[in-house]
Image (cartoon, rainbow, N blue to C red):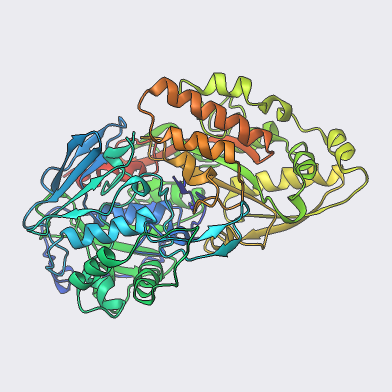
Length: 599
């Protein structure tokens, strides 16, 4: 999952930047970029509610929808997820196959000729680095339930769940350096998307030869040897920090984050259909066709200009005047009517695999369960839904599960048994009784450039103040708020999570003790044990039962409150073909290579 910083998991979807029409920089000539040449495919402009901030969206600080979508358009991998939520292999890129059922072993092979846009071949070295980052193999960090580090080291700041690849042994590398084999200690239900998939992690990720050089190593071969020679981490017996591995991880964690296009082109190499050509910080990003890309679906467009527009009304106005061709707004109450009045456009609508929620930190003012319960008792969820969602989706109701969405089969049973009915309505009187005269101060973090998050904050502030809480407005601009997640600068946060729609790894990514996306310090040994079972369970009914039990534990801990499932409403000009609705975090970008201009 990633947050919709839209901004971080299924994460905080709200990091969108405000940029108005006319802010797009004039791009450099296509001919100036190595590997790119002009073709008669045409060009379009697309709006994103989030700002671009990193060429490595796999880090916790960069795990945003916008960053992932740019990575999706500029990378390739072993498979992707289509808008029927089915896994589609990319056989021109490479192959993956089970070579053993017991133990589960999967061999990944990248086809000969697949290369980064600087000409360096993609191979086992790149896969080894991707595995190292996503497996936590070398980590020996020991933390408390609230996330306080007691000892040891965490190397790669990987945003996703390490549940899958933590079950694998040190990979075996083929003699031709184009294959690795991962052997699991236990069966893993999401093995097909656990590694190298465009579905969630952007394919193979960042180039090993660039990271090696940036970390002071001779080349990617030396990096791979370092990974092979370094022992696995043991939190119960932590080793001194490995300085060479620390340098590698630090470069992976930080070097690819930037506002503008770096002078060093090795920091934005592509293995996918498009290459980033230019960036106007906070305003726009331009993608151009990667003419060397022949190991996947050939893109039809020559150029895509991505404009960063937080305001749904600004996106709609730009679609109307023709300066935008596709918009993906964080729709508010007026968006539908404004779009329907335009004409000559195609609307793309449906439930998203995303939800907004209020999370409480498990320390500070909310260290005591009674105070958490009191605050949650003040949240007017239906009033928030009425203000933010009902105009887009008449009859919408609050979401009553932390792990299921409304259109999943197990949702109704989970909602009926998890204790969510205790918070169906705001009850300031109950809150006052729990506080017993206390007046705690609560700092609430949210994206103040997102209209729906502002509505939620205002209604929570009003109700909580009535019960005796002193609420402090911690709202920050779109480009700033998500960096605060997981810090001690707030007590509660309003944001969102969006998911890929396949597998169950998103649950431990958020709720497991010490997980990278567990920002509020929730810890439940019982829930952790259930999550261990969840990621190795293949039977769908049993998986639903496990998640239902996890859901109950989350609610009983007074973790926070889901607010509502996010309705999807996007639009495209009727001059653009093959734009199709997708409910997961990839959104309309899922088939970017098929987009074309009607001539």
